[in-house]
Figure 1 (cartoon, helix red, strand yellow):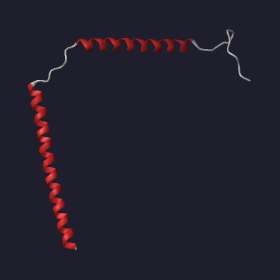
Figure 2 (cartoon, one colour):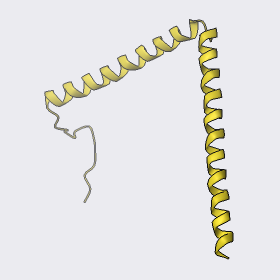
Figure 3 (cartoon, one colour):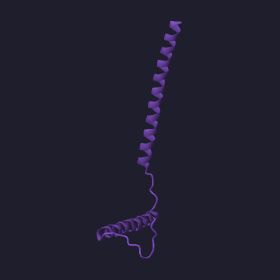
Length: 91
């Protein structure tokens, strides 16, 4: 048999539990409004500019990566050629 909830239903919560619930709701509410304020402030800030030095460093990194990849492909191709030669010799 299920109990009905009515005006006379008594819920037993200690003062400590009620305090923790209120504090938790307060912390979440303050965090939400603080976050909204930071978002509004960030919207007003100017967009960051990419400086010449940063652009040059990124360009250099991309070029080095391409060269390293090219060297790796050449090494793989050389290994593949050796494997093909050995396979041909085995036949």
